[in-house]
Each structure stands twice: as structure tokens, then as C-alpha cells.
Image 1 (cartoon, rainbow, N blue to C red):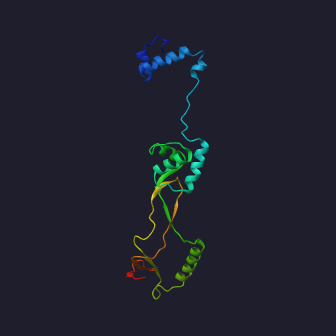
Image 2: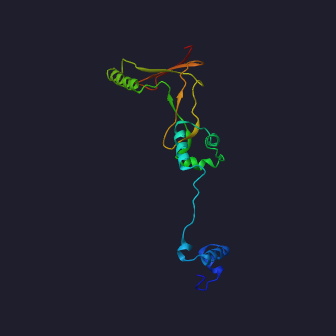
Image 3: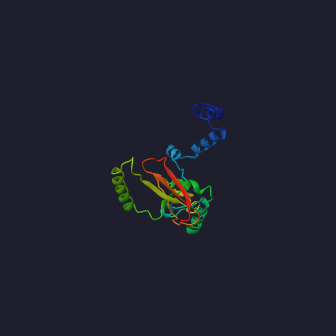
Length: 194
């Protein structure tokens, strides 16, 4: 545009840039030995403070260790690699590595999937053989308020869960409840010593 006689101001307006940028581009063009040198992209993208190998190590470590805050991750990286991040600066790295900040997934500490499947099969057979007018089948369980592991938030691999075993203790308030398998509006609740 400048070669065609356009002014710096007109060129800048047409390209949506400021006049100083037009002068800078012109100076870089005049200093270049040929058009190839001028058009060569010398931009070096920011790759982060951690090497690709360190990122992979961090990713593997975080898949098995729950960090509840970005500050905890910052402290781990500083201790492990001697590299300092800010708590806000670590978030883009964690997202790039595939982690999101979400709630943990609670699972019973003593769950046995094989025993659970066997129970379901026995229950199906029992319910199929019942006469709903004469037989009552109740599901019974007890609850113990505020006496269990509570889920928290932490940096967890996106699309994955981070399991936290729950406490199976039976202390404090004991509330027993029963639910009729045939009529879910038939509920029995009472507080007992055990």
C-alpha cells in the first residue's frame, strides 16, 4: 500500500493497526535481505515452565493424589521441581493437562460388587415369588448423621472420578428406617440405641 502511494495513516486505518506498527513493519521489511526472510515466522510460543517430561510426571502423580486447591499443586511443583507458579498461573496448566476442579466421588469403603450382584439376584427371585396382598418386604438400613466422610473439591482428571472411601463407623445418633419394596409410601423411621 505504501508502494502504491497510500499514506501511513490511510494504510494503518485500512489494516486496523496504528501508524507506529506500519512504520515498524516498513523498517523490518527494509532491513530484510529478501522477502523470504521478511515472511519467516520467528514466533516462539510459550511452552510453560515445566518440560514436557515434567508435565507428564505431574499428570501421572495427580491422577493418584488429590489436591484440594491450586496452592497445594503450586507447593508440590516448587518442592518437586524447584519451579515457582502463582495459584492463578497454575490453573491453565492444570486444564491443559486435562484436570478440572470438581467434587470427589464417594464410594462405600467395603463395597463388594460380586456380593451386591448376588443380592440383587436373590432379591429379584424373592419379589417375584411374593403375594403383594399378603407379603411385605422391607428394605431396612440405619443412618448416622454427621459421622462419615464428606466429599470435597479438588483437581481431578477431566471425565474421571476420584474415589474417597467413606467411614463405616456406627456411633452417635442411630436412626433406623424401613421402606416397603411394594409400596414406597410405607416408611418406618425410629431412633434406637443400636
